[in-house]
Amino acid sequence: MIVVMRHGSTETQIQAVKDTIEKHGLKGHLSEGSERTVIGVVGQIVTALQTEMERLSGVAEVVRISKPYKLSTREFKNGNTIVQVGDAIIGGKDPVVIAGPCAVESEDQIMATAQVVKEQGSKILRGGAFKPRSSPYSFRGMGVEGLKLLAQAGKEFNLPVITEAMAPEDVDVVASYADIIQIGARNAQNFNLLDEVGKLDKPVLLKRGFSSSYEEWLLAAEYVLSGGNSKVILCERGIRTFEPYTRFTVDLAAVPVIKKLSHLPIIVDPSHSTGTWDLVTPIALAAIAAGAHGIIVDVHPNPSMAKCDGAQALSFENFRSMTVQVDSISRAITQANT
Ligand code: PEP
Ligand code: MN
Image (cartoon, rainbow, N blue to C red; front, side, top):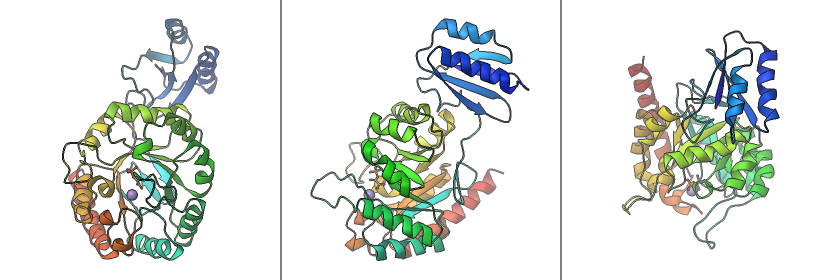
Protein backbone atom coordinates (compact mmCIF):
# COMPACT_ATOMS: atom_id res chain seq x y z
CA MET A 1 0.00 0.00 0.00
CA ILE A 2 1.25 3.52 -0.69
CA VAL A 3 0.19 6.67 1.03
CA VAL A 4 0.44 9.62 -1.35
CA MET A 5 0.87 12.94 0.44
CA ARG A 6 -0.61 16.21 -0.82
CA HIS A 7 1.66 18.82 -2.37
CA GLY A 8 3.10 20.93 0.42
CA SER A 9 2.27 18.47 3.19
CA THR A 10 4.25 19.22 6.35
CA GLU A 11 6.86 17.21 8.24
CA THR A 12 4.37 16.83 11.09
CA GLN A 13 1.74 15.36 8.78
CA ILE A 14 4.29 12.93 7.32
CA GLN A 15 5.37 11.96 10.82
CA ALA A 16 1.75 11.35 11.82
CA VAL A 17 1.39 8.94 8.90
CA LYS A 18 4.57 7.11 9.90
CA ASP A 19 3.43 6.90 13.54
CA THR A 20 0.12 5.38 12.49
CA ILE A 21 1.91 2.81 10.34
CA GLU A 22 4.17 1.87 13.24
CA LYS A 23 1.24 1.68 15.64
CA HIS A 24 -0.05 -1.15 13.44
CA GLY A 25 3.31 -2.92 13.75
CA LEU A 26 4.31 -2.14 10.15
CA LYS A 27 7.15 -0.20 8.55
CA GLY A 28 6.88 2.95 6.43
CA HIS A 29 9.32 3.63 3.60
CA LEU A 30 9.53 7.24 2.53
CA SER A 31 10.12 8.22 -1.08
CA GLU A 32 10.44 11.94 -1.71
CA GLY A 33 10.20 12.68 -5.42
CA SER A 34 10.13 16.09 -7.08
CA GLU A 35 6.45 15.52 -7.89
CA ARG A 36 5.15 13.92 -4.74
CA THR A 37 6.03 12.38 -1.41
CA VAL A 38 4.84 8.83 -0.92
CA ILE A 39 5.15 6.44 1.98
CA GLY A 40 5.20 2.76 1.15
CA VAL A 41 3.74 0.39 3.70
CA VAL A 42 4.68 -3.26 3.51
CA GLY A 43 3.54 -6.23 5.52
CA GLN A 44 0.16 -7.68 6.38
CA ILE A 45 -2.10 -4.70 5.83
CA VAL A 46 -5.58 -4.63 7.32
CA THR A 47 -8.40 -2.57 5.81
CA ALA A 48 -8.71 -0.62 9.06
CA LEU A 49 -5.27 0.86 8.48
CA GLN A 50 -6.22 1.99 5.00
CA THR A 51 -9.32 3.81 6.21
CA GLU A 52 -7.45 5.34 9.14
CA MET A 53 -4.79 6.65 6.73
CA GLU A 54 -7.33 8.17 4.40
CA ARG A 55 -8.56 10.34 7.28
CA LEU A 56 -5.16 11.79 8.20
CA SER A 57 -4.50 15.38 7.19
CA GLY A 58 -2.02 15.89 4.38
CA VAL A 59 -2.90 12.55 2.79
CA ALA A 60 -4.01 12.82 -0.85
CA GLU A 61 -4.79 9.16 -1.45
CA VAL A 62 -4.09 5.64 -0.29
CA VAL A 63 -3.46 3.10 -3.03
CA ARG A 64 -3.00 -0.65 -2.79
CA ILE A 65 0.00 -1.86 -4.84
CA SER A 66 -1.11 -4.61 -7.18
CA LYS A 67 2.32 -6.25 -7.59
CA PRO A 68 3.75 -8.69 -5.03
CA TYR A 69 6.95 -6.64 -4.95
CA LYS A 70 6.09 -3.33 -3.38
CA LEU A 71 9.11 -1.10 -2.88
CA SER A 72 10.84 -2.00 -6.14
CA THR A 73 7.83 -1.33 -8.36
CA ARG A 74 7.29 1.89 -10.28
CA GLU A 75 3.91 2.10 -8.57
CA PHE A 76 5.89 3.06 -5.45
CA LYS A 77 8.41 5.35 -7.12
CA ASN A 78 8.04 6.99 -10.48
CA GLY A 79 11.53 8.39 -11.03
CA ASN A 80 14.64 6.27 -11.40
CA THR A 81 16.75 5.26 -8.44
CA ILE A 82 20.25 6.57 -8.84
CA VAL A 83 23.04 4.95 -6.89
CA GLN A 84 26.18 7.03 -6.53
CA VAL A 85 29.51 5.57 -5.43
CA GLY A 86 32.54 7.79 -5.74
CA ASP A 87 32.47 9.27 -9.25
CA ALA A 88 30.15 6.58 -10.53
CA ILE A 89 26.49 7.33 -11.04
CA ILE A 90 24.52 4.15 -11.69
CA GLY A 91 21.01 4.62 -13.01
CA GLY A 92 21.62 7.96 -14.72
CA LYS A 93 22.01 8.74 -18.42
CA ASP A 94 25.54 7.43 -18.91
CA PRO A 95 26.26 3.72 -18.59
CA VAL A 96 28.92 2.75 -16.05
CA VAL A 97 31.63 0.16 -16.69
CA ILE A 98 32.63 -2.03 -13.76
CA ALA A 99 35.72 -4.10 -14.54
CA GLY A 100 38.36 -6.26 -12.95
CA PRO A 101 39.34 -9.87 -12.43
CA CYS A 102 36.84 -12.53 -11.50
CA ALA A 103 38.97 -13.21 -8.42
CA VAL A 104 41.74 -11.30 -6.68
CA GLU A 105 44.80 -13.56 -7.01
CA SER A 106 47.80 -11.46 -5.98
CA GLU A 107 48.89 -7.89 -5.36
CA ASP A 108 50.54 -7.68 -8.79
CA GLN A 109 47.46 -9.02 -10.57
CA ILE A 110 44.95 -6.65 -8.96
CA MET A 111 47.24 -3.60 -9.16
CA ALA A 112 48.04 -4.13 -12.84
CA THR A 113 44.35 -4.64 -13.64
CA ALA A 114 43.23 -1.63 -11.60
CA GLN A 115 45.67 0.56 -13.48
CA VAL A 116 44.20 -0.43 -16.85
CA VAL A 117 40.64 -0.18 -15.55
CA LYS A 118 41.39 3.38 -14.40
CA GLU A 119 43.21 4.31 -17.64
CA GLN A 120 40.21 3.21 -19.67
CA GLY A 121 37.89 5.46 -17.70
CA SER A 122 35.90 2.66 -16.03
CA LYS A 123 34.44 3.87 -12.78
CA ILE A 124 34.41 0.81 -10.50
CA LEU A 125 36.88 -2.02 -9.85
CA ARG A 126 35.62 -5.57 -9.33
CA GLY A 127 37.42 -8.53 -7.75
CA GLY A 128 36.12 -11.57 -5.92
CA ALA A 129 37.62 -12.54 -2.57
CA PHE A 130 34.95 -15.01 -1.42
CA LYS A 131 34.22 -17.06 -4.52
CA PRO A 132 31.18 -19.31 -4.94
CA ARG A 133 32.50 -22.22 -7.02
CA SER A 134 30.53 -25.12 -8.45
CA SER A 135 33.28 -27.49 -7.32
CA PRO A 136 34.81 -27.38 -3.84
CA TYR A 137 38.18 -28.26 -5.42
CA SER A 138 38.32 -25.03 -7.47
CA PHE A 139 40.08 -21.87 -6.24
CA ARG A 140 37.69 -20.36 -3.71
CA GLY A 141 39.26 -16.94 -3.38
CA MET A 142 41.75 -15.30 -1.04
CA GLY A 143 39.15 -14.35 1.57
CA VAL A 144 40.00 -11.38 3.80
CA GLU A 145 43.49 -11.11 2.27
CA GLY A 146 41.79 -10.62 -1.11
CA LEU A 147 39.49 -7.95 0.32
CA LYS A 148 42.53 -6.07 1.61
CA LEU A 149 44.31 -6.20 -1.75
CA LEU A 150 41.17 -5.08 -3.57
CA ALA A 151 40.68 -2.14 -1.19
CA GLN A 152 44.36 -1.24 -1.56
CA ALA A 153 44.06 -1.20 -5.37
CA GLY A 154 40.87 0.86 -5.14
CA LYS A 155 42.60 3.40 -2.95
CA GLU A 156 45.72 3.56 -5.11
CA PHE A 157 43.74 4.24 -8.29
CA ASN A 158 40.84 6.12 -6.71
CA LEU A 159 38.25 3.56 -7.78
CA PRO A 160 35.33 2.34 -5.67
CA VAL A 161 35.40 -1.45 -5.35
CA ILE A 162 32.80 -4.19 -5.57
CA THR A 163 33.12 -7.72 -4.23
CA GLU A 164 30.83 -10.58 -3.25
CA ALA A 165 29.56 -11.54 0.19
CA MET A 166 28.57 -15.20 0.30
CA ALA A 167 27.34 -15.67 3.84
CA PRO A 168 25.45 -13.51 6.35
CA GLU A 169 28.33 -13.76 8.82
CA ASP A 170 30.78 -12.37 6.21
CA VAL A 171 28.74 -9.28 5.41
CA ASP A 172 30.35 -7.03 8.02
CA VAL A 173 33.91 -7.79 7.03
CA VAL A 174 33.12 -7.50 3.30
CA ALA A 175 31.31 -4.19 3.93
CA SER A 176 34.31 -2.86 5.82
CA TYR A 177 36.46 -3.11 2.65
CA ALA A 178 33.93 -2.82 -0.21
CA ASP A 179 32.00 0.14 -1.58
CA ILE A 180 29.39 -2.13 -3.20
CA ILE A 181 28.42 -5.57 -1.95
CA GLN A 182 27.68 -8.13 -4.63
CA ILE A 183 25.16 -10.89 -4.11
CA GLY A 184 25.92 -13.63 -6.59
CA ALA A 185 23.54 -15.62 -8.75
CA ARG A 186 23.88 -18.68 -6.52
CA ASN A 187 22.80 -16.64 -3.52
CA ALA A 188 20.06 -14.66 -5.24
CA GLN A 189 17.46 -16.30 -3.03
CA ASN A 190 19.52 -16.67 0.12
CA PHE A 191 17.00 -14.76 2.16
CA ASN A 192 19.10 -14.56 5.33
CA LEU A 193 21.92 -13.01 3.33
CA LEU A 194 19.53 -10.57 1.65
CA ASP A 195 18.15 -9.59 5.07
CA GLU A 196 21.70 -8.95 6.28
CA VAL A 197 22.69 -6.63 3.41
CA GLY A 198 19.32 -4.90 3.82
CA LYS A 199 20.64 -3.55 7.12
CA LEU A 200 23.58 -1.79 5.46
CA ASP A 201 23.81 1.75 4.25
CA LYS A 202 25.87 0.60 1.28
CA PRO A 203 24.91 -0.23 -2.33
CA VAL A 204 24.10 -3.84 -3.13
CA LEU A 205 24.48 -5.36 -6.60
CA LEU A 206 21.93 -8.14 -6.82
CA LYS A 207 22.57 -10.65 -9.57
CA ARG A 208 19.65 -12.53 -11.06
CA GLY A 209 19.49 -16.15 -9.98
CA PHE A 210 19.93 -18.34 -13.05
CA SER A 211 16.50 -19.83 -12.59
CA SER A 212 14.79 -16.71 -11.23
CA SER A 213 11.84 -15.13 -13.00
CA TYR A 214 11.70 -11.32 -13.09
CA GLU A 215 9.17 -11.47 -10.27
CA GLU A 216 11.38 -13.68 -8.08
CA TRP A 217 14.33 -11.39 -8.78
CA LEU A 218 12.39 -8.27 -7.81
CA LEU A 219 11.11 -10.06 -4.71
CA ALA A 220 14.73 -10.80 -3.79
CA ALA A 221 15.45 -7.07 -4.18
CA GLU A 222 12.44 -6.48 -1.96
CA TYR A 223 14.22 -8.23 0.93
CA VAL A 224 17.03 -5.66 0.76
CA LEU A 225 14.71 -2.68 0.25
CA SER A 226 12.32 -3.66 3.02
CA GLY A 227 15.28 -3.97 5.39
CA GLY A 228 15.82 -0.25 4.87
CA ASN A 229 18.55 -0.29 2.22
CA SER A 230 17.30 1.53 -0.87
CA LYS A 231 20.57 1.33 -2.82
CA VAL A 232 19.94 -1.76 -4.91
CA ILE A 233 21.38 -2.31 -8.39
CA LEU A 234 20.10 -5.29 -10.40
CA CYS A 235 22.36 -7.34 -12.67
CA GLU A 236 21.26 -9.65 -15.48
CA ARG A 237 23.88 -12.41 -15.74
CA GLY A 238 22.20 -15.05 -17.86
CA ILE A 239 19.80 -17.87 -17.11
CA ARG A 240 19.87 -21.63 -17.64
CA THR A 241 18.24 -22.84 -20.82
CA PHE A 242 18.60 -25.91 -23.07
CA GLU A 243 21.44 -24.21 -25.02
CA PRO A 244 24.86 -25.50 -23.95
CA TYR A 245 26.98 -23.44 -26.39
CA THR A 246 27.17 -20.41 -24.11
CA ARG A 247 27.68 -20.78 -20.36
CA PHE A 248 24.23 -19.27 -19.74
CA THR A 249 21.67 -17.62 -22.01
CA VAL A 250 21.79 -13.84 -21.75
CA ASP A 251 18.30 -12.47 -21.37
CA LEU A 252 18.66 -8.95 -22.70
CA ALA A 253 14.90 -8.43 -22.67
CA ALA A 254 15.38 -8.21 -18.91
CA VAL A 255 16.77 -4.71 -19.41
CA PRO A 256 13.70 -3.02 -20.91
CA VAL A 257 11.31 -5.20 -18.88
CA ILE A 258 12.94 -4.39 -15.55
CA LYS A 259 13.10 -0.71 -16.50
CA LYS A 260 9.37 -0.85 -17.13
CA LEU A 261 8.54 -2.68 -13.89
CA SER A 262 11.02 -1.10 -11.52
CA HIS A 263 12.79 2.16 -10.69
CA LEU A 264 15.98 0.28 -9.77
CA PRO A 265 19.06 0.52 -12.01
CA ILE A 266 19.90 -2.54 -14.10
CA ILE A 267 23.27 -3.58 -15.48
CA VAL A 268 24.42 -6.64 -17.48
CA ASP A 269 27.29 -9.09 -16.94
CA PRO A 270 28.40 -10.20 -20.41
CA SER A 271 31.27 -12.26 -18.93
CA HIS A 272 29.51 -14.69 -16.59
CA SER A 273 26.56 -15.00 -18.95
CA THR A 274 28.46 -15.96 -22.10
CA GLY A 275 31.47 -17.62 -20.47
CA THR A 276 33.66 -16.90 -23.51
CA TRP A 277 35.85 -13.82 -23.96
CA ASP A 278 35.06 -13.19 -27.63
CA LEU A 279 31.33 -12.99 -26.91
CA VAL A 280 31.82 -10.38 -24.17
CA THR A 281 32.18 -7.29 -26.37
CA PRO A 282 29.16 -7.97 -28.64
CA ILE A 283 26.93 -8.64 -25.62
CA ALA A 284 28.31 -5.62 -23.77
CA LEU A 285 27.42 -3.44 -26.76
CA ALA A 286 23.99 -5.00 -27.09
CA ALA A 287 23.34 -4.44 -23.38
CA ILE A 288 24.17 -0.74 -23.66
CA ALA A 289 22.06 -0.46 -26.80
CA ALA A 290 19.16 -2.11 -24.94
CA GLY A 291 19.37 0.62 -22.30
CA ALA A 292 21.38 -1.02 -19.51
CA HIS A 293 22.75 1.38 -16.91
CA GLY A 294 26.10 -0.34 -17.11
CA ILE A 295 28.07 -3.53 -17.52
CA ILE A 296 30.33 -5.59 -15.27
CA VAL A 297 33.15 -7.38 -17.08
CA ASP A 298 36.00 -9.72 -16.21
CA VAL A 299 39.49 -8.45 -17.13
CA HIS A 300 42.74 -10.27 -16.36
CA PRO A 301 46.42 -9.51 -17.08
CA ASN A 302 46.93 -13.06 -18.32
CA PRO A 303 43.59 -14.83 -18.94
CA SER A 304 45.16 -18.20 -19.72
CA MET A 305 46.72 -18.27 -16.25
CA ALA A 306 43.61 -17.04 -14.37
CA LYS A 307 42.68 -19.08 -11.32
CA CYS A 308 39.00 -18.49 -11.98
CA ASP A 309 36.90 -18.05 -15.13
CA GLY A 310 39.88 -17.37 -17.43
CA ALA A 311 37.94 -18.36 -20.57
CA GLN A 312 35.63 -15.39 -20.21
CA ALA A 313 38.24 -12.82 -19.14
CA LEU A 314 39.26 -10.03 -21.49
CA SER A 315 42.98 -9.40 -21.87
CA PHE A 316 44.05 -5.77 -21.41
CA GLU A 317 44.12 -5.37 -25.18
CA ASN A 318 40.60 -6.80 -25.59
CA PHE A 319 39.38 -4.61 -22.75
CA ARG A 320 40.79 -1.44 -24.34
CA SER A 321 39.07 -2.32 -27.59
CA MET A 322 35.77 -3.06 -25.81
CA THR A 323 35.91 0.28 -23.98
CA VAL A 324 36.32 2.24 -27.22
CA GLN A 325 33.32 0.45 -28.72
CA VAL A 326 31.20 0.81 -25.57
CA ASP A 327 31.94 4.54 -25.52
CA SER A 328 30.83 5.02 -29.09
CA ILE A 329 27.64 2.97 -28.64
CA SER A 330 26.87 4.97 -25.46
CA ARG A 331 27.29 8.24 -27.33
CA ALA A 332 25.10 7.03 -30.18
CA ILE A 333 22.37 5.91 -27.78
CA THR A 334 22.47 9.19 -25.84
CA GLN A 335 22.21 11.09 -29.12
CA ALA A 336 19.34 8.93 -30.34
CA ASN A 337 17.46 9.57 -27.10
CA THR A 338 17.76 13.36 -27.24
C1 PEP B 1 31.01 -13.10 -10.15
O1 PEP B 1 30.60 -12.03 -10.65
O2 PEP B 1 32.14 -13.23 -9.70
C2 PEP B 1 30.11 -14.27 -10.11
C3 PEP B 1 30.43 -15.37 -9.43
O3 PEP B 1 28.99 -14.09 -10.82
P1 PEP B 1 27.61 -14.92 -10.80
O4 PEP B 1 27.12 -14.89 -9.40
O5 PEP B 1 26.75 -14.16 -11.76
O6 PEP B 1 27.94 -16.30 -11.31
MN1 MN C 1 33.59 -15.42 -12.15
